[in-house]
Image 1 (spheres, helix red, strand yellow):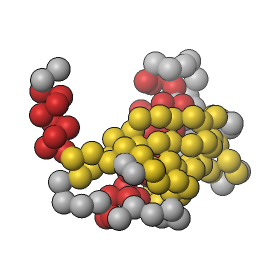
Image 2 (image 1 turned 45 degrees about the horizontal axis):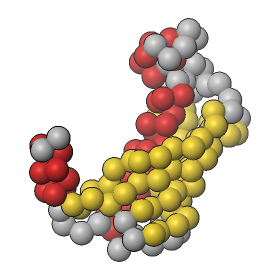
Image 3 (image 1 turned 60 degrees about the horizontal axis):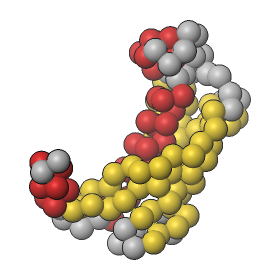
Image 4 (image 1 turned 45 degrees about the vertical axis):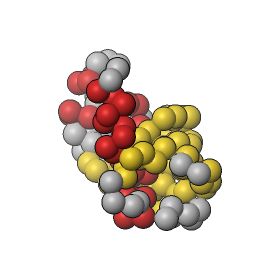
Length: 126
């Protein structure tokens, strides 16, 4: 059962493949905003996975974040997430990404608990 207070942490080293210039979201070799958001989603998803029932997973549905500091290639970043609200199947997380100099980005992220089989069947009918 997913409950308020569950925390997660994931880290990575910024590589050229994770930069704005490489993925096309900008022209500079710095940690790309879409990749920062991906790290926030992964951290949130992984934090609650052990608390789900068999056949369940979560899907991201909303992200509201700021990207506050640029991070160069080679620097380690980490994301911390915390469940701050659970409303039936909707889970809201507080998320923040850091490097050794402080905050890189922060905000909230929402995920919904789904039944994978039902979700796949519904998707196939689209």
